[in-house]
Image 1 (cartoon, one colour):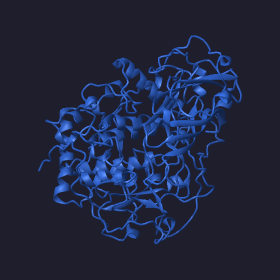
Image 2 (cartoon, helix red, strand yellow; image 1 turned 90 degrees about the horizontal axis):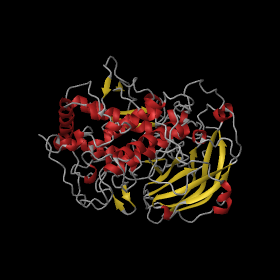
Image 3 (tube, rainbow, N blue to C red; image 1 turned 90 degrees about the vertical axis):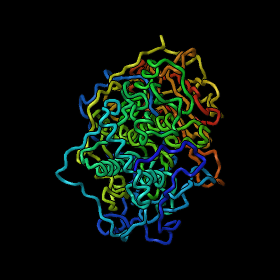
Image 4 (tube, helix red, strand yellow; image 1 turned 180 degrees about the vertical axis):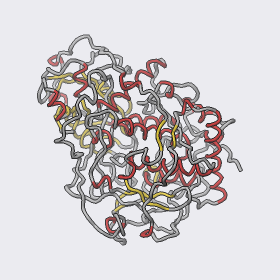
Length: 600
């Protein structure tokens, strides 16, 4: 029985087969502590582990000649929203939330609950008896193809797999392999349905972002393969990091041919051959296709290389039970991950979709098949990043490695999984079709003809604090030291640091940062060495409407060591910085700006 195209109307209940669950909403006050329930073995041994920011590699020598920095330099700058919580000396890793799902606890925004339960089907065994997952042996390596390179036969196969997954919603609403059930996994882990140690569980905005989504796609892919009796089936990855992939993949935009790969709740203006914007934050940038592609390649280089020289900046801040949710996201999660979600999701109030449905909101993102291809490429970025050299290695902290998630497999069996078991995608049984990564060597031109005189503008101490960014703001800022040796650069990263941001959490926010840029610059051209990066924020208010909408962010940092090399400012004592508002800058206040040297 083939499923029909989903109705684009968002103000009706789009999912008709909500999960049933025997678990009631509660904190974990009446249950054993997570560390007693879910840790290794019988999951009844409580222990403490470190939850520190560092990766433990501060004293190790950087691999010689692993990356030729000057030959691989580019032009944009990444972004990194830092934590407003100081990590504790010891902490407990996040346990699998097998007993804490609230059928009514998930919210879209304050006072607006998700219109269905996001909880998984009720367990048929005692949670204490859920086994740890073991990878099957002897299986052929699954290859995930690039979405723009697949043929019609593959598209038809993928559509058939999704069709069969949707049919399960009708034949058995409690089947955890169903399309609805799989979509709700993202909602449960991201919109407040789960609690851990009495706190909301959130797998975004921290170092859990990459491993959670890797495990999620692993089981999703195996379920699809089992439904079409093809154990070699691999999810397509949407390689938006390559110019040929910088459009909505063709397979997702043929409602009459592949109806189950199509989602009408997408931005209709971004269909067809429209070149996407990997920095999109709600407003379309007017520019030629060539300029958009150039901007995108610049963004990719800065996010993958310049602004992710070490695990903390790539993966995000530590998240353990004592720290709580949203400690701070890494570069790739912020850009391009989030902008792609927004670019695909509906425009505000389009088809009565008030919250960016489907892709533009955590609770509904899993209802768009494009979501899984998008995240397949995010997952691919993790694999590629570790090949770039230097300190680009997996986190080795026990509180990260021992974090657990809970999934059902292709045979409807529940399993616990650990982060430590998903660090190598090939050991998990899959790899990616090889495709060029032109962003690796995409070096932008220096547009400013000369060094901007730092004495011609106000200093940072004179400029800050600022109450809003409603126009470009230029200031000079003093460096801790200049003319650093390569050994000093390897030991410590130079960071442009903005302290004590206050943002309105209800707003889309983005402002760009340029270094040594002329006052008459075209601020929409990102493919330039002077572009240092962007600060972005999605609306992500607390589920409690009584809490204030304006919230503090401890700091926002950009790694600028390579950028200063590019534009010839390594020996300067002061540099000139410009903040350019793009979206919601009037809702941002910043206390101060400094340049620091930090072990990364």
